[in-house]
Amino acid sequence: MAIPTSFSRPISSFNAISSPSFCFLKPNFVCQNNASSSYNYQRLFVSCCAAEVGSSSDSLNLRQPQVSSMSMPPFGVTLNDSSTPKSTYRWRRVLLKVSGEALAGDQAQNIDPKITMSIAREVASVTRLGIEVAIVVGGGNIFRGASWAGSSGLDRSSADYIGMLATVMNAIFLQATMESIGIPTRVQTAFRMSEVAEPYIRRRAVRHLEKGRVVIFAAGTGNPFFTTDTAAALRCAEINAEVVLKATNVDGVYDDDPRCNPNARLLNTLTYQDVTSKELSVMDMTAITLCQENNIPVVVFNLNKPGNISKAIRGESVGTLIGETRRSSVTQS
Image 1: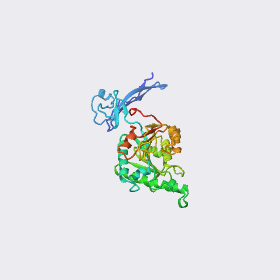
Image 2 (image 1 turned 45 degrees about the vertical axis):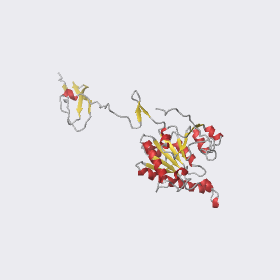
Image 3 (image 1 turned 90 degrees about the vertical axis):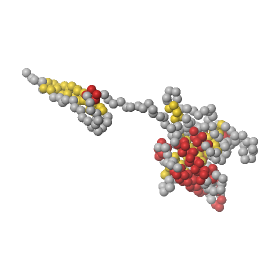
Image 4 (image 1 turned 90 degrees about the horizontal axis):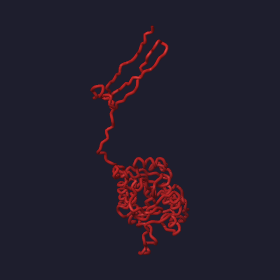
């Protein structure tokens, strides 16, 4: 007569410094007649808490995550009646185009530090809301290639390259201003200048934006015969930004030149076809066509009015909107 023999271990528990509790099944091996074997599973509970001392029934209660009823929504986000977060701004990733002439201010000097500081402060106010901001700067305040082409034997390509270097100067100045008030900023150039800036790498630029850094794109597209407006449209499409915000010295797009006609009317909205058919000097045709093909709206507004940058970034009604219709209120997502 064979005597069944079983081997098993008692339930064991131990205390450790780790906080979570967990349980698993341990096999209980049983030998019968040395001919067949089977496994019985025994629940083994391990409690990993140094301060947990009590009855075994108390230790079998798994910890549940504590959810605070006083949790607050992120800054810049409101709660609706069903306690669902919804944003108070229209766009989440924007590209701000700042012309070189706008950086010059009253033209007393190439770059007006008051203008750059105003830009930095308004960009800071919206980045705290979680909005991702990229910037393309022009160089017309220092050197405009199209104006110098043909002068003293300077060909268009060489003139445009000099203009690209001017945009790098503006970008470094703007970066220094932003970092002086605590905004993490990166400058990326279309051609390599490793000592002063990063080379433009699309994935790296997107990663910077995701980490809350402001990215300034300099040196245009890196090619002559293309304006910084075209560079803005191109970078906007590449990084999947939702809008191009063109900051200028005028309030928006008029039906006539306001400097010559005091009765010129500010246009609230325009279509891409209006810009091309009426030959409005908003952006060059390459830039506006690129925006049209990629369904990128363009907002033209006055940089010199305080608060306009943050209003435009948040999607409030300011300047002229091209490619979309105005909404009565900011869309709640």
